[in-house]
Image (cartoon, rainbow, N blue to C red; front, side, top):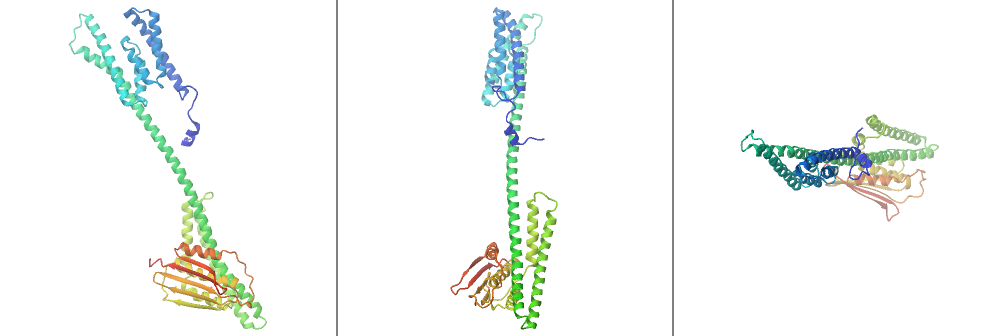
Length: 438
């Protein structure tokens, strides 16, 4: 299982408390290298003592101390390289020089310092090699190479002891920085993906909420008006049945027609919901944003395409008249086709306003006005005060009718105003822009 960036940050380095080392294997490696380097310098100190006449114990002690400096290579690589340069005339610390240059090149030390110390090491090694090789050539009378031999061999020896470790250190340092950069980018992408997932979840929740609100609004518009008229007709049927059987039969037929219409609209809406459930059925747990969007799109398209139109307002007004309401309909301008969502919203505003009159102002005279203007359609439903004679049908009110109308109108960029009139009635006004003409 791959560790994430958060896991790495939480876990931290493998080991803490070993001074500047982060891992136990780093401690073991550096201590081992320092021991080998100290042993090497101690053995070379014996030869150095023989060449210079120093006491052997002192030379060995010097070699042990100088070689053990390699244990500091991770913390102070410059100091390690300087010590190796200082011991070059004594022909000590070859391992310390190689490892020190590698560590220096792989570290974050400024490149100009690396170049200077590498040059110093190269020059020091070249001088020592040249002197020793010249002494050997002069001592061997039988061996007579050309003038070029000593400097060329000395140069190759100094390059062989310096260049490979520096180049390998530069490669390892670049690779290490590249891996760190890739790790940081991976952590950054991981955080961004997490943020995007959170935002997608928020958008999905918002889409679900919006869809629930829209479905609730559609259910309210479909059910409230039809059922309100059915209740009004049922009350009228109860009142006129003993006196006028023929009218009672007509009212009963109207109640049946309205019930069938309400059931038809509810069945269509439930069919839309079932199709949406089929779309999201494979995701039983979390609903993806794309699935929610498809559900909303399908539901909205079906409802808009199969929804009512402005030309059906006359039928709506006639149904209210048949329920006993006095309604006057006036139309300004010539009826023309609008965008389906505009026509449906305009119809629903008039429908809900008439439903509210049935609920709250039984027997009040009502005026429905439609105006077809250049780039908009306006509608207004106004009722006067209740006559106080018509019995209240006792219809419940959830208080969501005006809220739903406002949401519909504002969602299309229109204007919605509602409130009581000076005459004691109530007025609902809305203006919708013509989406096709815009």
